[in-house]
Length: 426
Image (cartoon, rainbow, N blue to C red; front, side, top):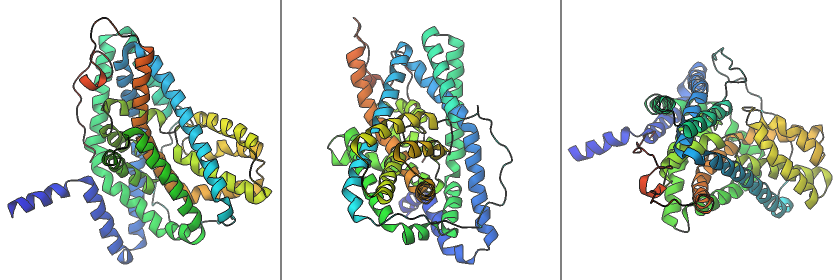
């Protein structure tokens, strides 16, 4: 009996179990709650989200700086490799969308825009508005600079400062925000239910959503297989580690606010867990596989329905390259990437005002699905990049005369290392 109770108490301490119980209780009690209660839940979630985003530039800066510092003089090579990897992964997903859209175009109905009207909103919102220079992308840039300076100068004061900053960032995420996960998810779930967003998707875009889900799922499984190998057990375990972050992104529609849990899930899949703290913050708003696949798939379908034929190969070659390059610009526009892409759709795919209205409406409706896929794909690609980085080091960094412990042997990236601490976001 005591053993059973201990297992129950242990399960209740898990964030996943707490979240499921919270959502279950809400679904049961929702019909009996007054409207203001639903809005209060949503307000609390938005408050947590705002606080998390406000702190994210500092968290990202310290994470990246501390990790890049451990590379020592390999830092520039790591950054270049990561940028090329991001561009290639985005380009591959765009061409995957082209292939799947070509196969499915004859079997899908015409796409029409539908407006979602809802009076449901938060009771209040923080009046703060962060300036353009206070963003996760700027934090990543500052982190890269500080990390490179520390790696090349080997100044003890800066190195100690970065270590303390990373320790504070870990405390903030694990001891503060991680404990708020059930409340964080609850408010966004209330928003989706009260606005009938799920009903809207099922009524108007069921076939499209199903097709996109199938194509995205297949590609995500491919990425996990690419990282974990052909072992079914390894693939399933890697997917399991990332799914909690994907689930939170599905309800919050914000990949940035789920970054701490993406890092934790990705770290569990890596031979060198520290890499996740450098890769995920640097790729969250640039390497967006779900966005690339979904938006280019929708663009293909809209183009076909309005022009009467598929876009020709040369048109898609030019469009895909410009689209991928633009992903690096959209990182500076949090939540506004679609508006940077609209001129590209107009210029290279001849979109008119009606076609633009449709792509905007579909982005609103399918945003939870797209964001969730972005998060899961980033977690999967983290392991793929680790393999690429290992090969790059082997080929381009000459071995020294004396033996230097490898990443697998010492659990870190450079020669000077410290024991890794296991963080717990669960």
